[in-house]
Amino acid sequence: MESRTTSRRNFLALSMGLPLGAALAACGTSGPGSTSTSGGGGGGATASYWYLSTEPQEGVRRRTMERFNQANPNGKIVGTTFQNDAFKTKIKTAIGAGEAPTIIWGWGGGGLRSYVQAGQVEDLTSWFDENAAVKDKLFPSSFGAATVDGKIYAIPCETMQPIVLYYDKRAFEKIGAEPPQSWGDIMDLVPKFNAKGIAPFSLGGQSRWTNMMWLEFLFDRMGGPEVFQAVFDAEKDAWSNPVAIDALTKMQDLIKADGFIKGFSSITADSNADQALLYTGKAAMMVHGGWTYGSMKQDGGDFVSSGNLGYMNFPPIDGGKGDPGNTVGNPGQYMSISAKATAEQKEIAKKFFSTEVVSDKSAEEWVGTGAVPVIKGSEKFFTGSEDADFLNFVVGIANNAKVFQQSWDQALSPTAAEVLLDNIAKLFQLSIGPQEFATNMNAVIGK
Image: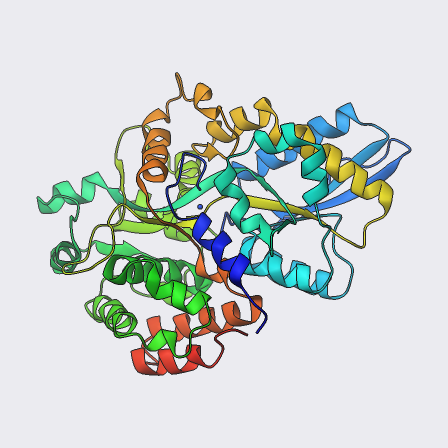
């Protein structure tokens, strides 16, 4: 495996001493499987742009593109939307075939590294040097996952997205309990909710990366960031760390105790069915990305507006060495430029990056979805927002976290990430145990 010294430093830069902009495999938003185009025409060159569907995030992306197209009729962007999981497959195939869209949306990290190694994305380092004002609009910590071997290959964009433990206050009132303050509390709450016919946790397990978020927190809370860092650094047999085995065992203990909604392995996150289980009262809690706040606000009737939605950072684990102030997720989203694009298309993309992507209007709209942008000064849009409490909660997580660990399936290479997700699914289905999981994962360390 090639040296990852710089990459390792960048990974840790996502973590240590994070300011507001340190931001959330895994995974960004998901949504209905629609495909659409916008823009086109105008008589000039066009640049293509693939991005994720689901509202309200899809609407912000679309309007950002439309504003750009209106201002640049001779150099427009044509957009196409995909559901989360479909996008991951489609973009990987297109890039491998040299047929990527001009603008490659993603999560940075290991996926971006693989594109760089294949020579498929443009080096933007000199462009950022020449456009220092653009770089200065974005939080420095967001550039870690955009950087490979000291060079920048993507512009950080959109929002920070920590993983959050959401809960339905009504469910806790029904059993006369408080939100969990420890792993022991979680395990104690499981039989109480089940006795009331309420699933303790909702989970869209078919999507696999939703299961991963649990392991990210367990590893961190039990052993600190060093446990996964050893995997990232390709240390031999890193998955066999006793802390990792203990965390995997605890995970299966929760599953065996009926901690999750029955049939969770057939529930998808792309359909937002996991969120619906929370706001309809069928599940008491859900561990999910910060982006789901906006979705639940939009789709959940008065669940959010009436104050029934609670949220908190994942609690500590009894005897764990990790800092309970740490978080995991996506420190931002990222846009790269295909190396196969024409010179005209690349210029359109760069103009898009330097204008609408970092504009105040874009930041204001992202705040309107209940999310915190990676654009500096976005706090000015919190004032008067009905989502101010949640926005300030996210800011508090980012400011207080000593470690903001990037989602595993984005930090690792696509090869290792796919094996990881496959084995996580098997672990949650109880078809393999912790030791077999560790053995399978040790086999792809560094690949």
